[in-house]
Image (cartoon, rainbow, N blue to C red):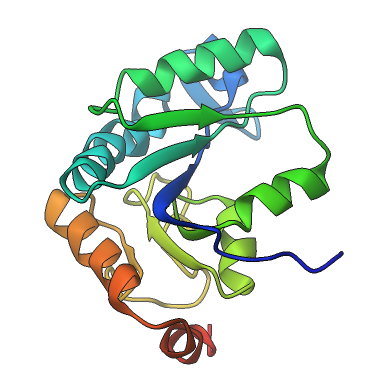
Length: 192
């Protein structure tokens, strides 16, 4: 893995999509042949978080970039349309290129600030000392892994994460990330 020049985009926030087209073809999210919850409940985090995130970006003159997850052109259009329902700003764009994994990592590594819900890609970037904000929806039984840091016992709120989705939490966490120096950030997250 070659070295990447990090943090080219200083006044942009990347949101990592958890959009999965297969989930929208049914009424319930199914795991291990069991109905877990409605698709509406499963996708609740996007509907709650994106309007708040776009409000924060608008107020602070920050561009929001959504990193798409869909694989083919048809589903990319559906994914972009899906997100356009929840982003209340004109200052956003959708990025989803048919590129190699390395090119996607190079693109992602240009962002100093990333927001996600329970993305493993978000965790990978966090492990690479990138400033990542995690907003997790409350547990959906029988899943108990929706809190940040699972299975490690963590509080509901921390410096860079929250299990509550509100504008005050979005503002608090993103202001934390914008104000902290990179060296202080690395010291703060090193244990995790």
